[in-house]
Image 1 (tube, rainbow, N blue to C red):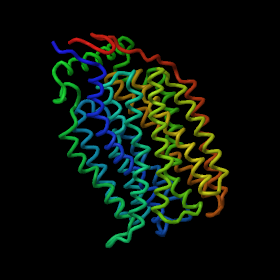
Image 2 (tube, one colour; image 1 turned 90 degrees about the vertical axis):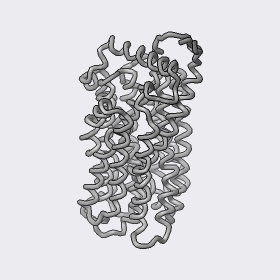
Image 3 (tube, rainbow, N blue to C red; image 1 turned 30 degrees about the horizontal axis):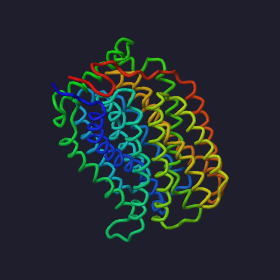
Image 4 (cartoon, one colour; image 1 turned 180 degrees about the horizontal axis):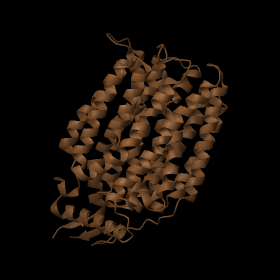
Length: 444
């Protein structure tokens, strides 16, 4: 009879899965957001710098339209096909399209490839969130999601200097922005092959768990699943109709709008403050993202410890609004860096607690549909943020400080709306599932 320690087995699962998923999401996020650095050099291209419309803002945001259209179908297919094959498929296609960005020679081609990149990546993030529900119950999930999602902050922290370094080099045959898209797209294709070898579809397929450990994890997840069945939350339609899902869509829309409004324009703001070298711009962007990553994990841990979600989302969004308001009135590099550090802490801290909300409401096919629905609708904010920042800045002369100022104030208002929405989201108490065993030790 094997004695199983809850703490030991969860630690074993975490060390086996989270670092690898973390790496995958860094690559995904980098391929999505590296266009913000490409802009520093692509702005010299005549077709990209068209004064009649904002090519960058629209092209950055159109990614999320493709993402929106294919998110739910992709996540439902993951539930049917299995995580391993579907995540590998997503990574291979997005890596190839991300690399193909080097062929852009016109605005329509730029828009088309960004749109296809969104289609290719659709289902990856909600698929990972769904995948985590196969291993962790609601009481542990905010911490795990926060650990996983620090990849978004660290992708910018690591990707900024890497992208800036590539742009600062003198490379042959192609422009540096073309080399950047190629070199940063290849890792996704390679990692797609690694996924097929490394990632199990679920606990029962994990060769690195003993039979008793597999049974323990499966029983623990099944107990939580049975609780959701009793509340009618596992049918696919529940992913759209369960009370609380639509407010979560609105809440995530505000989070995504502020996130990508900042992510896609921060390098340009730093450059406008007087920093001209692309590598230096990349290094400076890394600082606030690194600090935000640390705060993100701490907020997720505290949310799990207190079993409270709403205020762990609402308060950071208020901090976001404060940071963006301060940034709107800064002109020096130091002032912008300090204000944007505050804003980015507020932007990234809500993510772990937020994604614990829908996974505590839904299970089974409803979780697959609901998570994808919330992510796809919410990520339309990823289109709205860059688009409206670009539109507002385009209303003023190129070097006018009023464009960035009013764009940042607009995003600050979105943060306030998000804060209010978070406070109005339906409460869902996080209850540990009952299963065979004690809190720290179980006999199987």
